[in-house]
Image 1: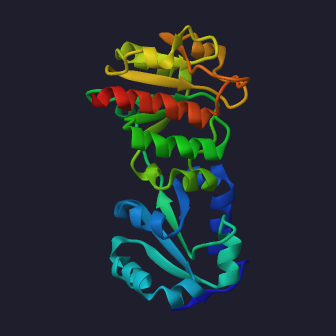
Image 2: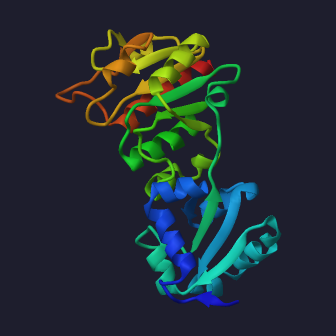
Length: 266
């Protein structure tokens, strides 16, 4: 199989563009994933292209055979020299396999649907690692959907994708043009909205989450915007000991999501 050996190659330039630029990803409606796990967990119908390093191609014969056997699923396979693969990769220690994957498409109605919605709405979240962790934790806690505003970090940012550990493939989500309208939509659907807020009058574990619910989580530094907080049915807080004022956004979201999961297991 021929290999690509130049960083000036048009395919390589495109991959770097997809890695670095949200606009490029959105225009093509694709994103990049790296590693054997992310390849194997990707639904076959959204895999578009597969790239492997020369070393990976030579050493991982069983995986390469798996790739070639699945080539009929419309995924093109290319071999890159190790130097070129390192150039394209977003990780310090590349695993040797990178895929171009079709972006997911969900509507607000789908994300907020189901018999017993358990939703997380994110307001101006900026850290890729936090967003990815929330996706992974949400899947573990049985969350049914995630809503984000347009100011949130890009879910398809390579760092975010890595942090999801594959949950990106399974967790329904959408970006709301205006998060305020999305929260109003939830309220109209009978989904009770809880704002994680320092001014919360109730501790988070005093509420009943066995009915349809949504947790509103704000920016790492500033919390929820007043516009979004004002739309919540209830302010809740996570009580703190010592001199700690609040938790990291991802950790706070995890506490709330798993409290809902705990209550629903009873």
